[in-house]
View 1 (spheres, helix red, strand yellow):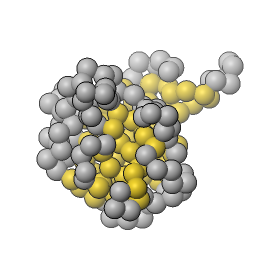
View 2 (cartoon, one colour):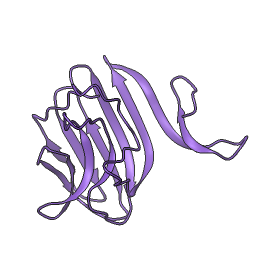
View 3 (tube, helix red, strand yellow):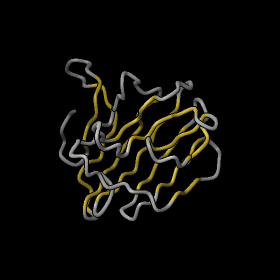
Length: 151
């Protein structure tokens, strides 16, 4: 998770709006940490659960990018809008929960398409995911350009 030494660069495409749909994050019920969602509070928006900061207005069927840095900065670009940057976020995951890329919160699955995600730890790329369909059996998943694994 971002914080101290981990950063994320995530490319996605939004689909139709669905309230409280989750994209990815880490959370347990005692620590509301780092869940990137669409939420209809003060208008349709992209935000972090339990944080309150609107990162960007929601736009359907638009390409987006979320960059999280180790200093608590989140920069979001959606569609043709100018990037939005929020600083001072607590992105450190102290919940003990693992990062879930296709996160589901209380049955609210995502309404989006995954394009790519790079995760860096200590300045080194540890995961570089791209979506693929495996030729051998047609199973869709994520290929990691770093370790060659299929997830």
